[in-house]
Image (cartoon, rainbow, N blue to C red; front, side):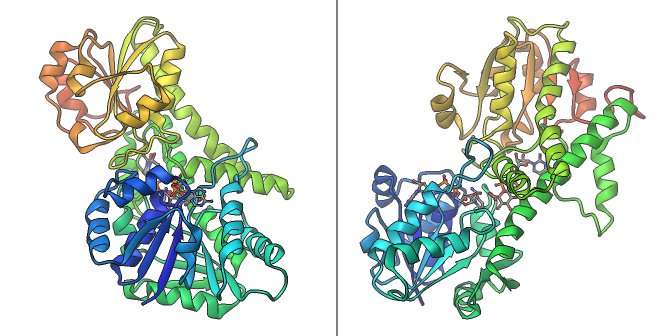
Length: 440
Ligand code: NAD
Ligand code: UGA
């Protein structure tokens, strides 16, 4: 069993810390956000992530999991220091590395024994070397035995614990193979395939993976828009494509496009890296453009359905988080829709099972409702933005009776168009062949 310090207690850091402690290691989770740490000590989670609270409680009770703001305390006996701080978009789309720098400098300032620094944050290619330089500069040559390993994280929000515990693969990049193998040993109980490579390749695997998944979604959204015009149904197109084992069915759900704290910033950062080094990332640019247009297209459709203007129309939004099972609203398609609709003079109200508190901070004057029916009351249009389970089977008869204009926009292709049309709704999905009617 090992002693581990995890720096940053967000989605990745907290999940990494609690999962490693659940595997029997002693883990110190560290954050500069004192309120966050205070709450964690009292069992209050900073994020909504299914299963997280129970696993934290279990490991705190077992005396294997600790929370602190103190680098000295967290690193005292640590053999591994995982960096899992944020790397948000900078002004030009580059990854902002200021939190990584801060973490590296603080490690260098306190560490007094050999250590492996494992970078789990998503960072531009070359950052592993840069972290090494920071430590070397701070400590001077040969004054400290340390190794830097890149270990990109592939978990998804909403299924983070499952993804961490049952990963498709563990990627490790290092100059010193022995250091990567030491980190691989931490993951050994998970019995996942391990790929050991160099630092830069590991860093690139992370960006390429996210960019590829975003590309699949933009691809199917482009196909969806063509389906709309030609009377084909993109859901079945995706099923038909997905049966080809070379293609697969995952990440081919057409809708309002991708959001979240990662795809938007990571595709942008990869494109930025490419431009900076003299290449022309035209596919990545198209992937981002298609994604932006997906929200605009829905607003345009709604405007057309409501007689050419959204001024003073009441529009309801179901779902605010960027995907179900999380309260994360970073780059959420729902929030972008809200801005576009309000810019056109619409009155917007919304409901989400978990993300209302975060949304209230972000858009304080947005009307938030207690349930989907309050959202539908007197609405001229209702948009499904996030496919939470509780929106799958609503009382549509009731919704029909309380809406002012019964227009439904199914931004996630979740509802049954036939039965909704039979109830009298005007229904518009994404790529369901709405323009030309498909075979009944
Ligand atoms: P987050 O914003 O949820 O959390 C980051 C945490 O780091 C915050 O609590 C912040 O206070 C803390 N922090 C910042 N600077 C610090 C410092 N110097 N010392 C200690 N703590 C510090 O971030 P996240 O969503 O967990 O993402 C972290 C990294 O992992 C990013 O690079 C992201 O791209 C990557 N990633 C995220 C996900 C995801 O699903 N969210 C998945 C894979 C990879
Ligand atoms: C994504 C990746 O799936 C993770 O592997 C990665 O670790 C993570 O980014 C990261 O680097 O942070 P996440 O952002 O949690 O995970 O969510 P996804 O499930 O990938 O969904 C991203 C967005 O794409 C959501 O807005 C979702 O609604 C949308 N999406 C997803 C679609 O529109 N269609 C699909 O078929 C799939």
